[in-house]
Amino acid sequence: MKNEENILQQRNIKPTAMRLLVVEKLLKQQYAISHKELAEQFENADNVTLFRTLKTFLEHKLIHTIDDGSGVIKYALCQSGCNCDLSELHTHFYCTECKHTFCLNETEIPNIKVPQNFKLYGANLVLKGKCDKCNK
Ligand SMILES: [Zn+2]
Ligand SMILES: [Zn+2]
Ligand SMILES: [Zn+2]
Image (cartoon, rainbow, N blue to C red; front, side, top):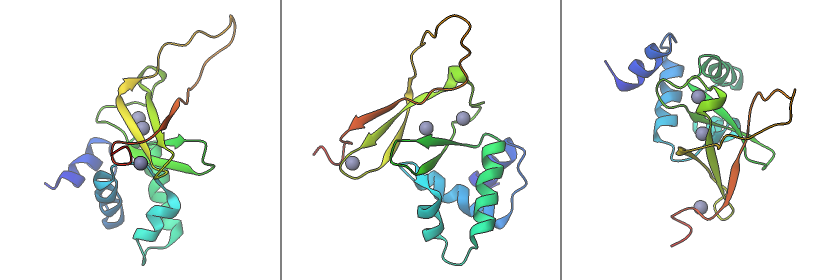
């Protein structure tokens, strides 16, 4: 079985040609990608199908969204077994030179205290700086 097919089946997503292609792209990406950037790589695919594919992937927690402050939502693959729970969230890194956003999967978001009776649902921690390539 192909790796991409395996990844989809682990998340109970039926492998279709489009889905396999999108996973393949996401696997190759070193950084998070926006819907527009993804669409540009699929000249022949229609936007609706692509959008639905991303929606399915989100629902099955194969990918997560990142709001890096650039005004455009970006998408990146989740690590295998990720449930996108608050305790599993990781930090993101936005490079101000190349404008790419990276998942820092090894850097968890620290336990943040909220006031009494406040309920925390999510957290978005974006670090800013230069990535390894831009910092050379
Ligand atoms: Zn996740
Ligand atoms: Zn960079
Ligand atoms: Zn991420």
